[in-house]
Length: 410
Image (tube, rainbow, N blue to C red; front, side, top):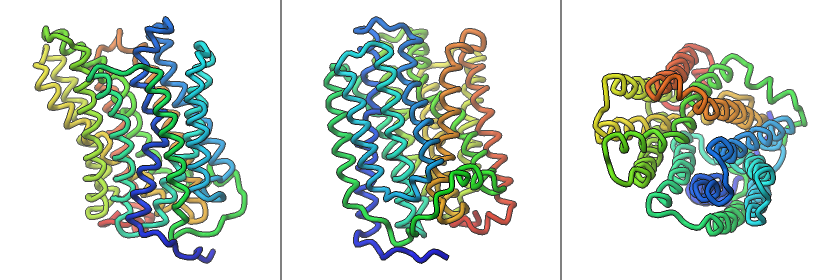
């Protein structure tokens, strides 16, 4: 067994605070797209499809960066704080390139660069945090993902309050990303870290195709099937609900509602972390996906019955937003507990690459399917992912790997 590195001088709590701040600030160029997109579309004369590609470019860039990182075993062979700092600084530079008015293709390249750079921020941060916590690891990772969820929601609040000049948004988020990278530098490897393993590109595939990790990844894909599609398109959906009910200023109301629906997931991540540590991760993820998929189906049914009141739709959507992401951090936590120790970071990164690949597909499908299925049909379609994911996590609970998952009985 590889001997552990010397214990870190930072306390686990201090490391969690620094890394959570680092990741939220470092990931801010990703979040900024939602705040800047309406003005970019208007100022650059982009249609809806072109505008959506500014969002999809980040997702696809992240996938490319994560695939390369996993193949190179970067999260296991390089110090996470160095990767986070480099990734955040690169993301800041790629984001700031938008200020040069590069045109649509240049903007798409810049946004893809942001995503690729952020693949050096998010997975290594999760890996680093897992080296500080054995007990309470689900809560620690839940706090980090909860902070990211709140960051994802914040641009909708900005738009709901009247928006901000896109140049200011881009400039500020670039500076925040650079600051986030610097905040990671004081965080050394935790006491559970191991020495760098040998370079082995095949590990990215090997660790996820073992029976237990494969089931956990299948569960994660079920979770991701609905998550980003719902986050990306909820404002459009709820704006239509408000307009249909004759509500004035539907765009502003939809932005504020979306902030609530996405933002409440931050609390869901924390609650999910607590329950995962106490009940068991497979039980928590299964419960979360049953409730999330059930909420999507119930909302679809309400829409088929007629035009439900906006208040009813919002209440059910808040419930959906809470549970849709409550399980998110627990999939990475499970991988950290059952993947081969020296290649945990590689396994986490590969899992994230698969998940974000799927999100790009589900986001892009909405404009194609919405005219044919309507929102009710889309919500029913989205519910299939978490329902299948819940079955995968139930199957994982019956495998020998379940005994290695901390928290309850797996």
